Length: 295
Image (cartoon, rainbow, N blue to C red; front, side, top):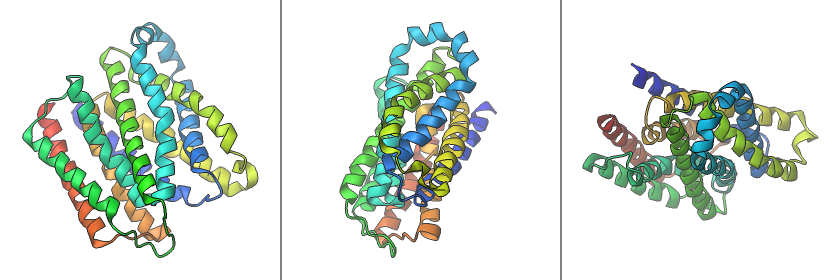
């Protein structure tokens, strides 16, 4: 039962995260670096504040296993900068699918080398389909009727960086939990430290934030709903299921992102892009079933 509650929590987090790309388009004056640093930074610091008692209680364990905390904090700081820049350069759909679509494969590779994951043929087949799907999506023509993206390849590269850092902070937070650190303490410390690292970026790139109520509304929505609430759900899920399984379930995020991008932003994909997305979703099913078997 706990495993299924964890799965449901990660699904809810994915639904919330799926709104971020489209919401970000409502504040084009804001730098993607500011949106990422403000959303993840403020959300992380808020998580840390609410988990202060748990963090203090588990401070000895956090100190002993500080290597996981350091890796997680650095990954938290890099992830939003790469993710939101990827969406700005290549579009909401491609940026989200590459970032989130690459994370489960990278997460499983990390867990494999740390001996937390057992590779099997079903996972390998699903991962291969996911890689093919991402390549097809990456090289498909973006047929948006309202926006032309001229730096798609750079956006894809940044999406892969986002996928790697997403996998890293999920793995490191999970490792802290497995070492006995309370879930709230592990997530609060990891995201709080990462949030502190993002403050300089926030200050340097945030000159347009107070120029309009619209900009501030977008910023606070990002910080409070998908980042704070979403990662509370994700942290609960990580305490019940493996990092590779959790990151795989979040492949649901691109579905929401793509639907919203087409309905609201005006993006649309070519046939090759749709086939690529279908392969990614087949990858989701195969890798999830494989992860359930391993767990």
